Length: 313
Image (cartoon, rainbow, N blue to C red):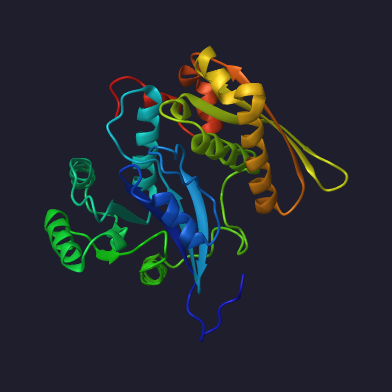
């Protein structure tokens, strides 16, 4: 870390929670801000499960983004744990960014989030981030901004395209200025606060999510069961894909094992690019009908099993 002198600005650091409905673009924004892929991005909703921290340096500021699961109406234990993780991320943060999609506007789900923010009180500054601005006309954006700011006292409003980077420098500047004065929380070159075992599992789950259809991605989880550092500098990684039904196992494997082979190859290539070295990836598929009711599975995902108890939101 650079030592301060009377001429240098003080270092700043803190946590910025990204909240919003599923598919609002939180993971895309996180990856855009960090400058590297640290969170799953797919066209399917509810792909982020745990709180994932991505770390961005901006001048003297270290911005720690917390990508949270999308906030939605939970139905199952896993859903309830995911929503609890999202609100936990928001309540622990120094700043909160509420992402909404420009073309969807103020939806019923976003209104429910605003109502919850009102109940939590206004101790933590919340900025509105209207994403996917390239999908609507400017007059629509202005009207939406006015409507949203009448519904909640946002500290600031930003209009961006997380995918293309429009408006992101202005958002980054504001975050860097608004975080509290503090020593940096992580080494300067660190971009994520997740064990490599979990990052590897998330990479494989993303490839499965992209490859499979309908409900199956939500009925599976991936765990890194073994990690061996080899003498030649490579890593041997063993993972298990847990599915909820016997019929799902055949779909995940594919005819002659072609699906799981393609998933493993795609995951290995991305993991090698991320780590900068050779990876030997081995995948197994196992049936565990009640994995969503096993506390151990939640620990692996970084979720609190008890948050999923019936009646909690």
